[in-house]
Length: 167
Image (cartoon, rainbow, N blue to C red):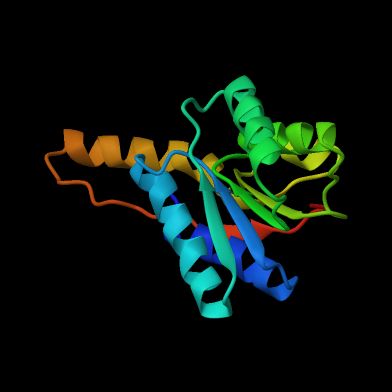
């Protein structure tokens, strides 16, 4: 996997550089990888005096995230920065926020996670945390071969970096 805490830190650093003060994290932090993303972002927020709210989503599907984001906006002041647990969730947030009259990047900054191919072609193009999943297949085969040879395979952390786009 990627360095999820670093991914959160990279998102938080971007929000801090942009002067954001009200941050929203969208994701189910009962999942370890997602919780680490949240914790990385939250540490940066605390360093910069930014307020962080958390929108747990009951389901990772686009429609569930879209509904949760829309409902959250009806009851809360809009954030000026959103970190979504995935690029698909980021797309759902953009759509829900647009329905409420909010447009990225004019009204809020947004960062997704995974750098799936549609993220670059979405409108607006999604700023994301890349985990080089194209390397994962080769690493997985290497680890499997090690196991077959009786060698205990070690964990590998994929390179993790911010891909800056329109949001």
